Image (cartoon, rainbow, N blue to C red; front, side, top):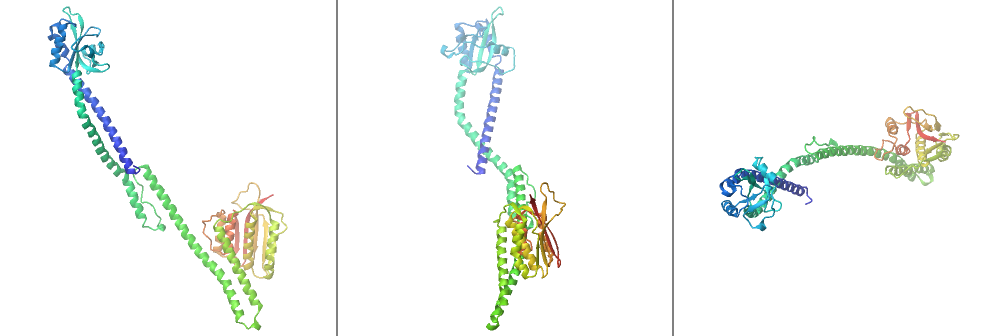
Length: 493
């Protein structure tokens, strides 16, 4: 009974049964009305003829022992008739029946007068042998020789005998009637259900067929159902939602393909970054091993150690990048002073810069406070400085300083922003790297579903860390001349 088919069939059968029963009642009412109208019309002059035929009634006599015998003779000729005489007030005077059968001794005279005056039939009057039922009748005035009205002759059409035989016939016909009603309801309900099911399920069948056809298509072909489906609003909404879902699936599939391609390119780039120091490490170690023991130079071991540290740094950056992609790093914004941050950066990178003869020019005199996560900002600056040292030749210069920077597309309401500029005069950035980092300008909010740009690991980390800080960035770079990174920070007092 929980299936859609069963519930529809049961509902259709119940509705049809109620309709057939209502139609039968309406038909029965019309049939009884027509029958009463016909019988009363046929016997309309019955009481008038009886009053003329019987000598006593023709003289206006309403109460006489001989009347009972006359009534008995009349009722033998017509067993369905019951004859009464009434006085002018409608009180029952004479009749041919046992006294205990008479339940009401008075008949309402307005109905009798309406009948005699020719009102529209059928007209029902009180049945003296019943407490509350009314039946069709024939009536006529009784008048004496002087023409004075002495009462009424009142003839019930379809009396007690008629009711008894009719009830016997109904008892025999009732089972057949109800069996016929039930069978007709079931047959009609099945036919109606079949038509409705065909009409209502045809859009579902078509939808199922179209979905089966779409199953053989590829996701990158732009899947969608062919057109709108006629039928109920639910079917139309279902097809619309399926099309929206298919469009989203197609877009996500295309995004996954792009992400996989970019990841593939990124891994190729990363493998090159790892291969170079690893090859250098193995090459210098092999060279050192092939040399005679007394001629081995510690400089080769130092160069190999530097290559090993480079590999270690790359692996550490890869782990950091994986943590960023998995959403394991959450920023904690707070008030941070820039000067201590700069001093810590000097301590970290001064030895390496001195070794490569690169000057570090960090502004340590500013007394500025910004709203940021100090650890994440430290990682951003560390990666930028690390790249700058790597690609800046001897005698070069790396600077970090805050500066005023006006931007037309930014509106500041409370505190003014501060832009931290990280610049160098190294090899600069290529066009595709510059475009990848500039994506932050239009998409400052980091999304883990974003594809990785074709950058080195360090710059890829910078891109995602700045996304976590919701920072804007402006980049200027010319190959062979150097790069400038302008990072927007929110200044607070």
